[in-house]
Image 1: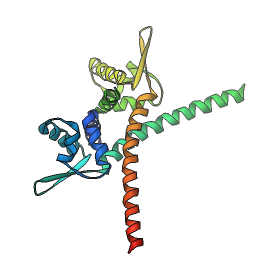
Image 2: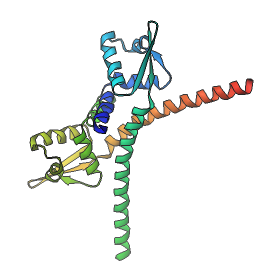
Image 3: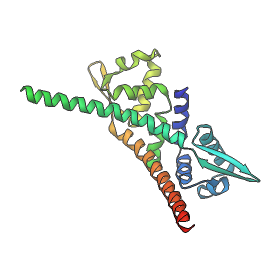
Image 4: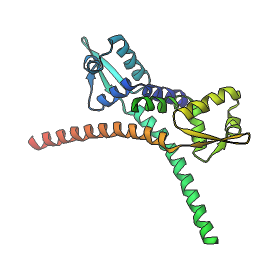
Length: 109
Length: 109
């Protein structure tokens, strides 16, 4: 389950348009029309990116009248940061062990 | 160029086997045989995962005799953390602005 979610969370980040949308929505909610404007790509293609972001949990969308507004969700960012943070911790623990080893060897010599 | 690299860096993380290999290599270098052992998947499929990780810059491999050893690279982790950190900063800046707004409104009232 967790694997499935992380697969999608990271899959959403494999495209520059989707990463740019996340960056834009970090500044506040926006309508799909506003979001699409800077990219100059056809709306159906843009909507596919929005759907990928929504399915992965990066954004939620809500409709009022004819306007659909997109809002960034904290959970996907937290999941991605959490996984990378674990890798960083594993790595740093290893570096610490190597340093201990070097220190002990210096002391023994 | 940067987009192309980040596409690959995140693409490498969309698969649980590749994420597990990164986790294992954080503890230190390992041969492909050692790495493949816990997964119980055919070696050609496993080698494809290794190739994706290597092409994306997550690992480097080197061969001595018949043994190919994989080592984790710091750069891909740094690139992924860097991008997510930027999004976190954008988000936190917005939260701060919203808090300022609320504080000012309270003061004005």
